[in-house]
Image 1: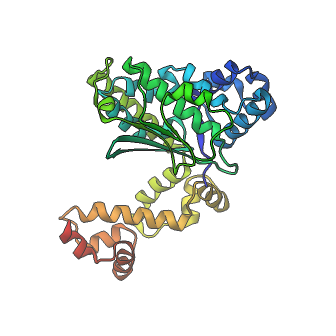
Image 2: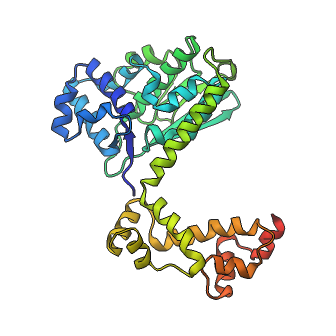
Image 3: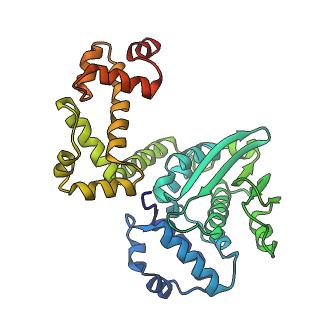
Amino acid sequence: MSERTTSSSWVLAIVNGLEMGGVDCRQLFAELGLDYEALTDPDARFSQDGMTRLWGRAVQLSGNPAIGLNLAKVVRPASFHVVGYACMSSRSLKEGFTRLVRFQRIIAEGADLNFRPLPEGYALTLAIHGDRLIPARQSAEASLAYTLAFCRWITGKELRPLKVCFQGEPPADLAPYQQVFQAPLQFNAEHYALVFERADLDAPIPSANPALAQLHDRFAGEYLARFSESRMTHQARQLLCRLLPQGEPKRDTVAQALHLSQRTLQRRLQEEGTSFQQLLDDTRRELAVQYLAQPDLTLLEIAYLLGFADPSNFFRAFRRWFDSTPGEYRAQM
């Protein structure tokens, strides 16, 4: 599993919320081995497990298990990195949530967002994943509280969700939750979620600006591309694409081209949830679809472009990938 990271801009929002709750974060960062100075670097990132330890100690030090809700009081668009500005310039919250889901990894890789219609409205659902540590409940509660407060801020309306869902048992003291969310609370739910009426999410946002939204989309896309390029999986995949037309690339060749030992390459790919063989297979599968969409390429040429010395190996691999032959697949396309 790759080490998930969180943007410094979101961590700074967390720090502001914790300090509002009386926690000395400079001292706490030193205690946990986190770099407090990196909070001012917009490109810095913090490990997901580091954030889990931060929440755990903050709850101990403050004695307040609901401290994550403080993030509703520290709303500023920069906390969501460029994504906050992209949401602000969206035509509606519905469009803003679509952007939030698309660019979520910029803010924090440990969170999975999903936005979907329901019979009664729309749901923004949230799942937080840890690496070695089970993520803190406060992390999800902070995300819900901040997101709702951000929506209220950019719309200028006191939005009240149809309901707010939480995984796990209800806390001993519900008052802070009722005060922040001002909506029916559901515990022991399948997901953390904010559920809204359709009319609230379809209403126009005062700060909507389609030209700015496009600009922010481009910035966010470029950031994600830069971010991906720092990943070993991305670098190795790019190299495989270049090497495949010369025959099946060997692991030692790829490792050498990346100035790594074979063992280091394999370890770093494993940390990112894959292996050399798996990455080779995935890259061939993705390229096969792209090549089949080009009618001027014969199946034999595609087999060689994918590094298969024997075309029959390509046909076998293709049937394993798609449960059909390349010819059948191309006909369906």
